[in-house]
Amino acid sequence: MSRTLHLAEELISRPSVTPDDAQCLEILARRLEPLGFVCERMDSGPEGLRVHNLWAKRPVAQEKYGLYAINKVATLVFAGHTDVVPTGPLEQWSSPPFVPTHRDGKLFGRGAADMKTSIAAFVVALEEYLAASPDTPLTLGLLLTSDEEGPAVDGTVAVCRQLQARGERIDWCIVGEPTSIERTGDMVKNGRRGTMSGKLTVKGIQGHIAYPQLARNPIHEALPALAELAATQWDAGNAFFPPTTWQVSNIHGGTGASNVIPGTVVVDFNFRFSTESTAEGLQQRVQAVLDRHGLDYELRWTVGGLPFLTPPGTLLQAVSAAIKDETGLDTELSTTGGTSDGRFIAPLGAQVVECGPPNAMIHKIDEHLRLQDIEPLKNIYRRTLENLARAAA
Image (tube, rainbow, N blue to C red; front, top):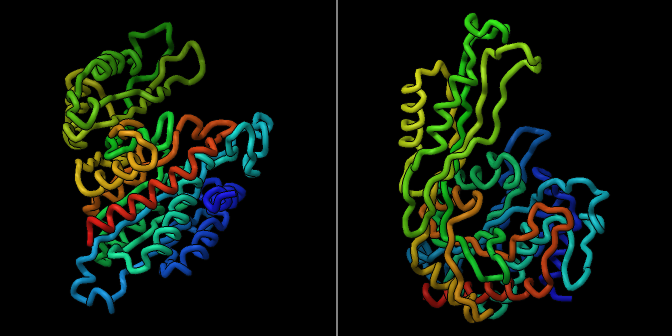
C-alpha cells in the first residue's frame, strides 16, 4: 500500500462531519513536525461549535539565506479541509462511510474524493520533496480547516485574517478541491465566480381569498418582477468566466390554508457572478427592478465571496507542467462550479490554483475515488513543488 493511500484511509476513518475535525489535524501535525513545520492551531468560533484550524509553516533556513533575503523568499501554501458533509442514510451505503473500503479498484468512504485524499497527497508530496531537497528555496505552508463544508465563517477566512494582521505573505496557493472530470489533472480551477445571496420579503395585505379587493396579494405583485430578474442578462462573462447567473432557490408564502391571501412572500435567490460585475452593481440593478414594479419590500444581502482569478503565470505554469509530465494531459483551465476557500486566500495577494482528483462522486452516497488516481495526484503536487523551487531559485 502506498503511503498516500495509507494516510488517506487513516483520515477517512475519522468521522469528521463539519465542523468536527475528529482529530484529523493532530494526525497531520504529527507528520509535518518532523519535516520542520511549526504547527499552530488557530481554532475559532463559539464553544460547542468550535472550528479546528491548523496553520503549519516551514520557513527557509535563516543561516542559509540571511535575514534580509528570507523576507523575499516565495511562500507556497497547500490549503484544504478535513471536514466532510453528512453521510446521508447509512443503509444506502454499500459499506460503512467511515470504514475505508476497496472494491473494483476504487477507494470508498466519505471524504475519499472531497478531500482527504488530496490532503494525504499534500503531506506525502512534501515528505518526498523535502527528503530530496531539504534546503529548498521555498517557504512552505499548509492551511487546513474543519469549516469548509459548513458556514465557512470560522475556518480559512479566520486564519487568513490572522495571517494578514501578522503581515504573513502567501505568494502561491494550491487548493486540493476535486477539480478533475475524467482523470486526475484533466482540469484545474484558476478562479471562481463570486457568490451573493438575497432574501427578499415582499409585503401585501392578508385577507380572505373570496374578497381579493380587500387584500393585496404579494405573490401576484412579486411575480412580474421575478420574471424580469430571471430574464435579465447581467453580463456576458469574459475569456475566463461564464456570464453571471441569477437563480431563485426558495419561495415561501401562505398560511397553509387554501382560502387565505398571504400577507408576505419570501424569496431566496443567489447570484454566481463573474469579474465583469460587482456585488454593489448587482444589488443596485435588482433594487431598481423591484422599485420599478412598485413593490413594498425588504431585502437582505449576503456576500459569500467575491470572484477571483489567477491569470497564466508562474503558478499555473508550474501546475500545468507538472500535470503534463505526470499524466501527459494538457490541463483545461476553468472557473465553473461552486465556491471554495480559495476566495478567502486570493485577497491576500496570492496566486491560487485548485487542483484535485475527479469530482463525479463528491457528496454522494458511496463516495469513492479510483485507486489509479491517487499516486498521480501526489506526484503532481511533488512535481509542482520542484517546478516552483526552480522558478524561485
